[in-house]
Length: 134
Image (tube, rainbow, N blue to C red; front, side, top):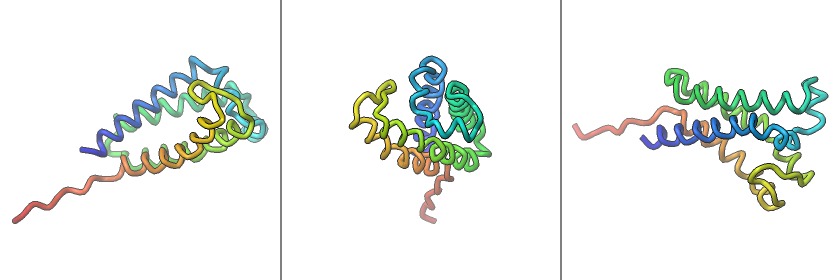
């Protein structure tokens, strides 16, 4: 039951942040490192929108695809790893986004990302069934 609640909370958080990527597109562009535009050949706005789409898609999959739970967990963890360079870039450049408007908050966010990655894996692994007395 605990993993189910954790999965739903993670899905809700991903969905909310994903929606914010559409509402606050300009604010999230500062997180995208310049090298990401060169490597992907996409502009910052497109990268922000695409990451929002991915977050919403992962949120939906966490809830709607119980048979694929493990794969979705790994995909979510991979996503968290993929966006980590943006968090580092934001901290190093000192640029603000909603809720990350101080150096301390931006630095703290760096430690949150690995926790989110672990959370995604833990919340999507099968729960052990307790073996009752026989």
